[in-house]
Image 1 (cartoon, rainbow, N blue to C red):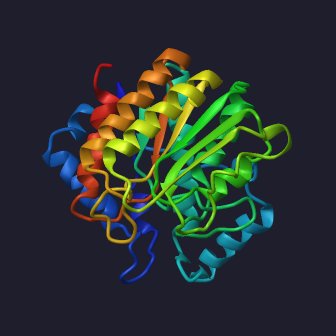
Image 2 (tube, one colour):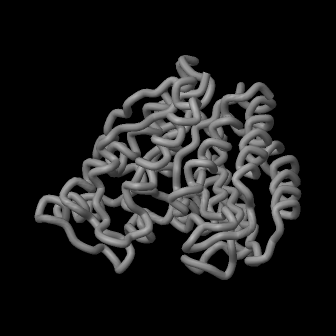
Length: 312
């Protein structure tokens, strides 16, 4: 069974007029999934909120308090792209908490895998700075939770968002227990993710960056992805797989885009699941990152969900 974690609290994170990361992303996706009849096949559950202590496993207390205080005082910009509204702090806690809810369900064998349909996204948020539409780093908080709650010491984070997850990389750059694998457009925002960025100290070799040119074709993308998954990820023998599932590598995405079709996300998902089946009893939790084509994001999510649901 595949579980989908969602709560209407995510719609209350108000980024203002004309911001690409807006509530319509989720509203349209849910309407589409219901009309396509896949919603009814999923085990839909509500998340709990992450605690301040759980968030502080990644982020500084001053960063957490800045977001909380900005929300309490009516909202404001943390940078030109990243806005906090009065309800954003609560939404961010529930976004991070969705992954923790999903992890518990997977570890307790109450579901096979899970997708967290959340906002705000997270992979640009560093341990000291919220940026790039992201407040808290949902997937990094999830990895820290797996480490502390379940004493698991080999976690892989796969990031196929078109933007490099600089915040996730920063969190685990010197940590050999977390393998971070990102494929992303380069050079591009946020300017990180060169292939020479491979980790530091005991974490050296446990960061894998695959920078891609804007005209990389889907067949090339998928070949590189499969090769890296077989050679580097499978050999790591992960005990849990997390996915930063951005859909802005889709060819028509309005603010980024590579050349992927919606159906390519199904291919990426099924191959990831095959590695997880071989290594860790299929334990996969995925969360929404980017993806800003309001009509086609739902189709990309549908393909991803079909890849999670189907038999491998």
